[in-house]
Image 1 (tube, one colour):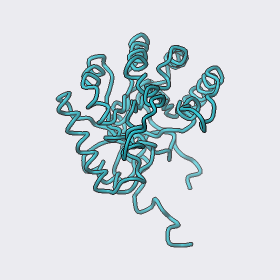
Image 2 (cartoon, rainbow, N blue to C red):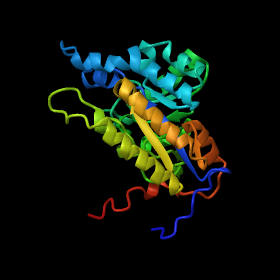
Image 3 (cartoon, rainbow, N blue to C red):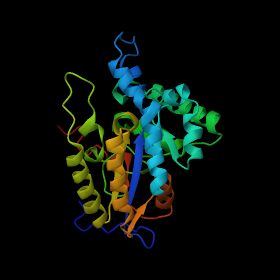
Image 4 (cartoon, rainbow, N blue to C red):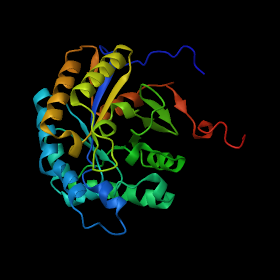
Length: 286
């Protein structure tokens, strides 16, 4: 228990940071969910195709207008099916990072399968771009000690966990924390019967703006996560542009890519470092 946490030492002249991240899931979760055989129905699959056909390009154009580099987490199968995607993002000064191969859910795979998917993704990114990616985000934001050990072995930062408001270290890996309430999927994801109806764009825009101001006023990292097929619609891109403009007008906020944040954090010493041995303090006591 830390009763008096020290403020995070952001680089001068900044006192907080913000990051715009995109999980380019496209069809990958659908393929994983139906890996034993795709259904004959088309609605969900077509909905997910929207990002590659229209939404992602609109989002990148918006980022170019506001002069911000986003971080795009891409499953290997999405890059494989869209070989122009990774080179195109780099040509437009955007950052790319790993997001599983088939958007595999942690509970569905073994440690060995995770390692295989991670290494296959690395090889594909290098083959398509000539560059080795430096970061990873877990599908569905779940991690295991094995996954952290593999990221440390391959010298990759991570952005999947929620144990801090600022970058920290866990299991020898730089962690760039996320938040469910700053993710578009919990508000807007709708694939038909059984899903909760999407919430109002205006209400979510107001919440995210308040979140961004509150978090950056308190010296935190505001990490926003959106998806190509969800937030690539015209009204949501306009909403995101207004939010990013608001952040750009706050001179104490460093708007940075995930890799820039991770590289800066690596220069700091003595920051919060969570050991894997301390992650489950009550295991075996009940």
